[in-house]
Image (cartoon, rainbow over all chains, first blue to last red; front, side, top):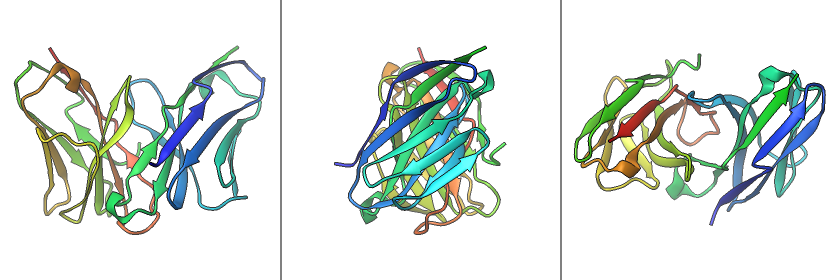
Length: 113
Length: 114
């Protein structure tokens, strides 16, 4: 069964304190791995797509990496405005699943000044 | 702003009732997806439409149904509502069906069943 597990569930950081969020996955053929950011009461906001092991993508203070079993979202020198829930999702190759995303439960990040 | 619109933003109704949620995809996107987000289950895929046709089904209850219209907007119908149906219902759209197009999400409809 396709599965996505994110850790930790919650993370509290001081402003400027860098850290990483983990997303481990088991999927029958990975088509793509996606990172989203979600603020309370809003829809997920797209951050990155990673397609193959070794790939890296960066956007401002965020950097996403991918291996064959997991992905990391590195946050460098975070600011309070980075506080949000970060969701990881995978897209499998199973035709019956269409192109739906399988989501992890998310990591809720709180950054204090 | 993702370009995906959903109405209404909030919906409060009673058990046993029926509601319709609406989603308009981004301009040019042919695929529409419906997801349900609750505190205990997280984000769960319900159903996907591509250019008017059902493409895939996830954990969608028989009491729920959806359709995509010729103008590509989609509606999710929820009937015989139960307390446990209270959740944030999210719609997403992407350009294609078989490609790796990114899914962009709307703001969601918050459904509360009393």
